[in-house]
Length: 368
Image (cartoon, rainbow, N blue to C red; front, side, top):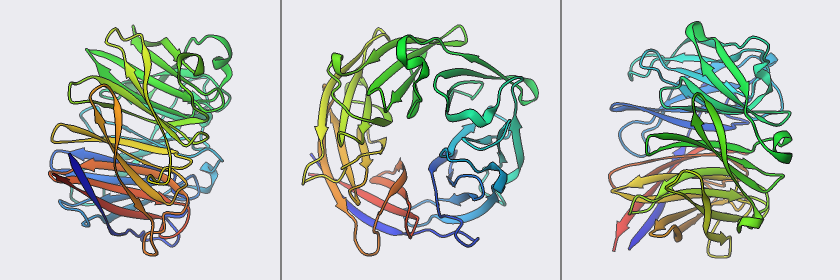
């Protein structure tokens, strides 16, 4: 049995005035013994890089990159790291630019991590239409969602040229806008999962011959009783069985879907609704980490708090602990959530609409 103790490790700051106002995405990139937290706003804001240090509370600002005013549009900005073994590129999907726009990053732990701009373009395609993007493996291929609805295959060629093609979908989902995209590799195959908030549906795709094939669509008819599914995370239980965690803001719920060994089925196996003992009402953020072989799920919504769960055999979500906000860490309007495992717990970074905008927490795990 596991018990968790939450503690705040302090608010983070930016070198530029108001540079953390309006954060939309967080991502930690680990490169050997070095790790960097990236935090971004929309256009007319800032991309920030933080060295997270070796221990909780050691996160410090390394550099900030200005996002031009002309890049601003209403879509949230989605961080997408492409690491092909050379100089990594950090792209920002959702900016108002005809080419996919980002920066080249040097993540050796010394000096400014931003080493120049990076762009990738596709003939006949406006990259400003992208809302979500997910790359697979070394970043040569991926999947993206369009603001007008629908999904596309993404493939990088020489000179950062992109090949883009529509993904075949059936029925009304062809025109639905995706809320989130996550991916995983199982038994040597690459899978992507797409949530549709308005259609209350989760779709599963498998990469076959360079294109994504729709394998399954799950909704209420299949036992997925949710409203407004959005953020997702992939995890597994102690037996190695893979699961998809789905956060649904409209139903204030977390659902667990088992990913079939045949690569064709998604089966709902558990469903939790927020109550007075948890802190995930209107849940819109979820992530997963593994500590000493045990999988944990961190979730947050509009409840001014963070909830921690573990995955039991069979896919059952077990609530471990919840942290309520206080005067020093108000957690009003959570916009992004990122977490990594340590030897004795979980480091969590949370961005919010209101001050202090970006805060680090530590979840100490105690086995009893």
